[in-house]
Length: 107
Image 1: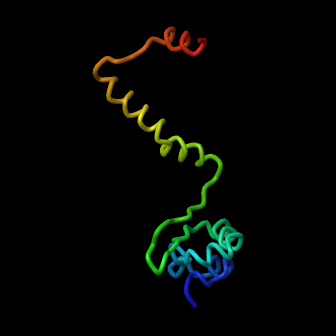
Image 2: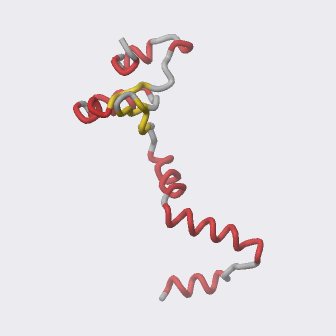
Image 3: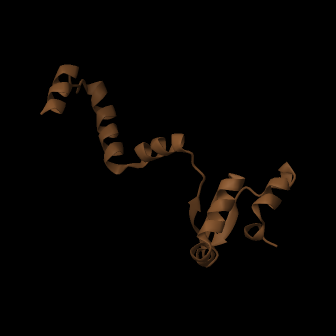
């Protein structure tokens, strides 16, 4: 039985050294059984590697609400670009006063 076939309970009960770091699930199995796969992901807290014809293509990772905001802010393209531009401008003295920023927000 492969790690993808194990139940969440079997994974939790396995000795620490024998626990798989991530289950592998084929894309077809994910399409047919998304609720079961997500329930196991939440129960085990372990990532799930999604495969297409045996090759890894994605990873499902458990996330809590506190981490979700950080993830979105880190990966949102517009936010990341703006943050990088701001970080690059700071050493060059490209800053705006708080008064100017607040006035712009009021417009």
